[in-house]
Image (cartoon, rainbow, N blue to C red; front, side, top):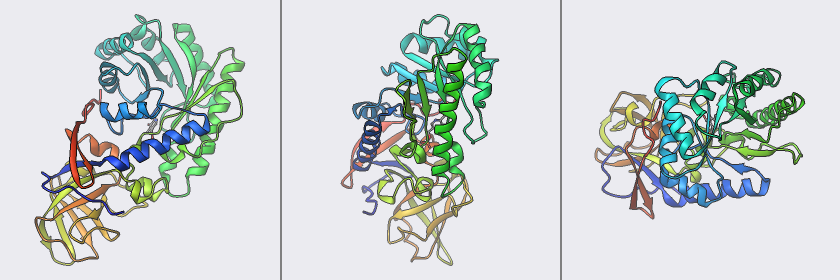
Length: 369
Ligand code: PLP
């Protein structure tokens, strides 16, 4: 089914298709229920209280966030089970803010270095619910320690008075290119099991093994044990994007969010220019995709072969193998990576059957700190 944009849009605009969104939420929830995995979806993708409520209605246990600012937004909106899956080292105002979140919600925090332990304990000491998960590196080589090093991090946490409830990882190396998903999912399962076993041998009682990325969420096979709960934290699955399609984690019909843009000029040689530049579409590139996004609907230019190949702040240049659409035509663009794109907009225009039926604020927009 091609993307069908509502008419009379003020562009650039962030448009979410309600039917596709609901289908994505239902499909991941049903997978998690069947696999016996708790869903703690990552809210950094949508940053929206309304979408988080829908995830909860579909059975999500709690929410994952990346920053204290995001935690503040969702705790204030009544979400009482939050995992800050980020290795925080809170001092000063951030420590005060984290403590306030801990007063509103059960908050678990990631820890990847012994140095973080006293800072987290100090920040969370006013609550009786200060729980941490040790971050493991499954092969992404961003943050996280090896299963062997996890014991030292856990000991530092226990010494500081924190409760170590488990381990977590993000197998981000899955985004290296098509074909990486099965290996990354296996890496995730292996380090989580190994990390939990090492903590258990050292006298800890890990209860939660938390993994997560959209391309691996349906592949991660929890090792057969009833000693600990498995949790998945996919984020991008709510909308999907060009990268998820390239990796085989989604098909084009599952792309639920696009940037609507107006053609402002037509150039020679199959080129046209839209009013969505890097400030709307982001500028993220990967070496297995050409350009910054793809036009999927609008004036005959939709479909493979219409790619955003150049960006300035407010202009996107599209190269197409089709007849370039006339200036004034509104087109739908699927960005490479949807999460940072959302952060460029104040609101979602919610479309159903080609009509705008609602507007939802991007509640946690700009909550980077
Ligand atoms: N958990 C962590 C720690 C992450 O960094 C991310 C994504 O960056 C996710 C979960 C969700 O991954 P995805 O966007 O692939 O769904």
